[in-house]
Amino acid sequence: MINVVIIDDEVNARMFLANLLEKELGAKLHLVESCSSVQEGVQAIKNNKVDLVFLDIQMPEEDGFQLMQYFDEINFEVIFVTAYDRYAIRAFECSALHYLLKPLDPEKVGQAITRFQKTREHKQAILEKFDVFTDYLDNKRSKERIVFNTPTGFEVVVLKDILYVEAAGNYCQFYFQNKTKKLVTSSMKAIEECLPEKDFCRVHNSYIINLNEVRSFINADKEVKLRDGTLVKVSERKLAYFKNRISEMA
Image 1 (cartoon, helix red, strand yellow):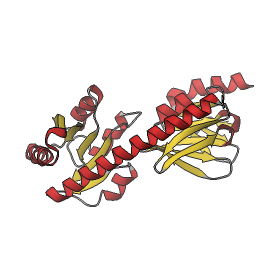
Image 2 (tube, helix red, strand yellow):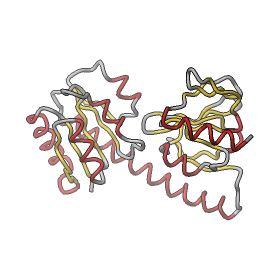
Image 3 (cartoon, one colour):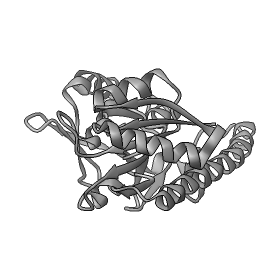
Image 4 (cartoon, one colour):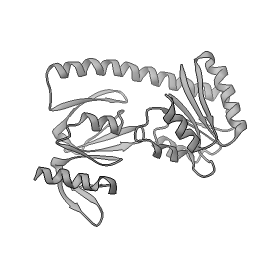
């Protein structure tokens, strides 16, 4: 079963897409809700288990891109549906699974569904391998490294080598002391829960830093300077917590 939410301010567009999906998926389709605005979509996603969102971009009040701002963790796939091709680059920067142009071509919709199904199967296969490898590390009582899923498999990350972690759409980017970086398919929330609290601190919705790499803090800009010179923003909400964590290390 694929749990789907459609978000589009045009009722005819929602009905047309729903009909296409029903023909393509049949009994596999569960249309959770058909929404006319970003706010309706946010509530539908938060109140239900959703696998796939078909999201219009140009809508009154809030555009489709703003939907992502309402979630700390994106655990559903997004296919953008729009009459304009100029948003394609931004859509894929948001880790969109696909980008469909109106008027919708049934064949293109079918291709998008196929891509979703393959992506879900691939993620499940990776998770199974990940569980086996994690069990192995747990048995070895390894406290110096951790395993994360990547788009192509999994990555063993040495904790002391991490400078900071940055949110990247549905995924996250690790930045290391040796100036390399690695994209992982875990959410910021999942990463925050995995990293040891004594060494790492979430200073912003989009950033987790290695406290051992902090060299200074700039009050005026609310930015942390790391060992390599990188400046990381600290949110107002996290500021007191961050300063308290630093004082504990002194």
